[in-house]
Length: 169
Image 1 (cartoon, one colour):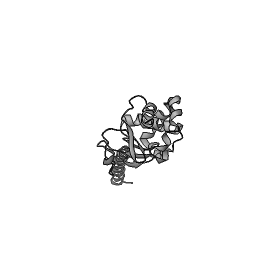
Image 2 (cartoon, rainbow, N blue to C red):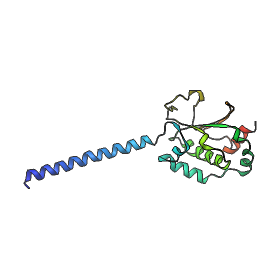
Image 3 (cartoon, one colour):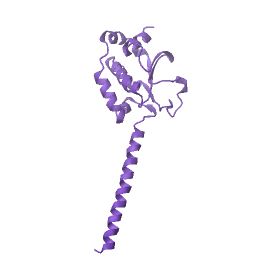
Image 4 (spheres, rainbow, N blue to C red):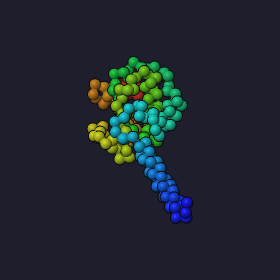
């Protein structure tokens, strides 16, 4: 192998390494963007990607007040629930998994919850303006299509006490 051929292969190798490293960093930034969930989501979407570590940590460490959840068991089934959250939002990362845990303890069908994930501008990529969202998370309780109450950003008391105050009406 002569000097020119060796030089060619060396330059070719260095050029490929530079291109591949740029490609890797763009894939990483795409992953960061893809961890921002936007649009109509399901519970399983919140249990994947970047949001999952927050979800499982909050879910496993939260203990709802048993005396309140016992009361809620017979009351909450007649409500439909909509959650609007931002996977980028610290309150969403904390409150939504806790709320899901409460619903699980109540045997509420969490697959029937309507979940919308929004960006920083509170846009879900689909029209949710009828929900009048200004802060996230917002958890809205409907009975027969009529809004009965909502929990916005953080609970006033605790999640289960705020739920109790909505469903006892």
